[in-house]
Image 1: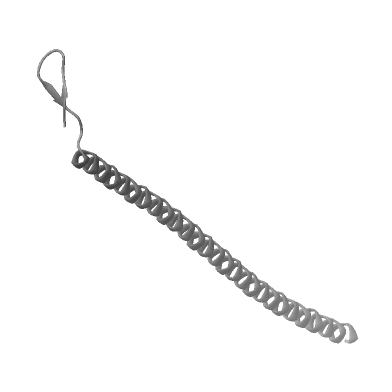
Image 2: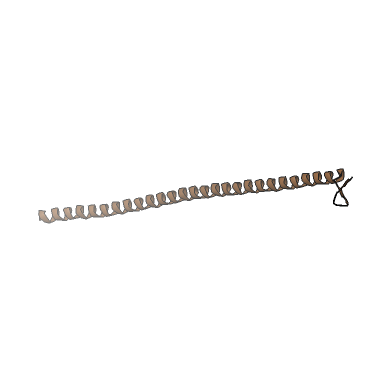
Length: 112
């Protein structure tokens, strides 16, 4: 289509082919933007998943470490108490035998 131009020459208006191209380009650009938006949202969701997984793993490791440490400290404490109790028993037995023998010796000595 051509229109008369008073300054000279003629101008052409857009044809239906031009309109079809612009419409297709607009749809193509919209599709590209939708794909980029979808990729961005997927990336954000994946990063959130990784952070949540890392948080859960670290919390589990912390809890396991805390339980293992508590168990180890309890075990060492129990062994130390047992050893100290055994030492106290041995010292008490030796002291008792000493005083028992000392008393027997004293009684024998006093009876002479």
